[in-house]
Length: 520
Image (cartoon, rainbow, N blue to C red; front, side, top):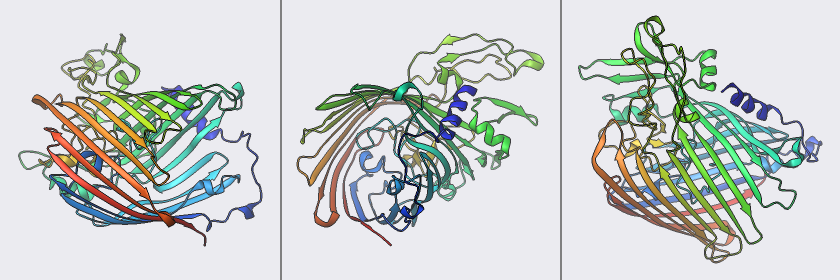
């Protein structure tokens, strides 16, 4: 584990070696130039709730209400404006005034970022895309997705692949380390009405590292990308109302040591101050990701995987036991390892037909989340002093409100987000499922482009609250965008849901926008 984190730190610090020729003249940096603006209006009307693919993977800027919409405006100066200089500056403000949303006013993005050579430092709330997947056609990433509102954070990153100074250009690295704070306290109060578990002032940590094996500077069409994405919810205060009217409170720690524990995942709970358990590192989760690419003259294909985990055993594909007795009841006195089955994975393929207008991109995905380390409780207890794999309960947590922000799961939206719940519980009530997903996109003319998303899902509920019988769900969306003169754009989308997981829904969404560039 320590080696993994040494790699994270090294790839973010080692940015000084570079083959690019940089411009040293500071006068080439003009912070008022290259400002990109966008003005947008969107409205949705549905029978039932907003269908899944009209709601999901929009960085949380969406609503389930029957009628909803927003007016949005943004001004952003991207870092690539100063791409030829040794250092660069970027900033942005993106706000929305919605109706029938979880907020009456939304600051979607507000950030400042600096770049020195290839390393960047960002402060604030910003929309970050998924890695190793199509952001328009994929169902989404399991750990670091694009389904929820951005978390304000301080982020140190190598955002683009950096060529290592050895291996003759065949090895490249990128990644990030970030700390931030959740902003949905008031929404949790309203959603739960203080009658079920909620949390306040929860802190956020994420990190990711990606290694690319391949050389783009020579004719070699094959490349391999390997990555590890990890995240932690920690600190804050969790409130758990009880049936007798009392409230059990869990106070997370926020010292320097606890920030380090969030960075170095432990995945264990330790007794403290007479309690049976006190969470030591918070809600730990992550994904192993990989992608194999083949780039031919007229087509390109990528095959990828995304294995989700919530503890050491599923992370390392291992199970272990051997806890002691008596005073050593919580101490590993010996270890026995057995291989974990490689389950709970998203497998996908993306085909790009470079010169085909009508069908340009095709994405096919299969997702299995039923195993979750098995059906037996995972952590050992005072009465059971063995560590037994099982019951990881994906996206949920016994102290925190799980892997969600503003009611939307932060990962893949096929996990049913808490915002769909009618019982006032902030929990993912369908996290064991098998799903199939198809995405198709094309650009028949220079001005017209489209995409189609279709998903089928068999849900089993959770280990704690399984369905009495399998639930089925199918979701579909067709979307077309037409680009007019002077950077005006009109986009229309129609979506449907069928089944017991999300219900029967049908809706239409219209978006009109105007974009451009100006200088101060």
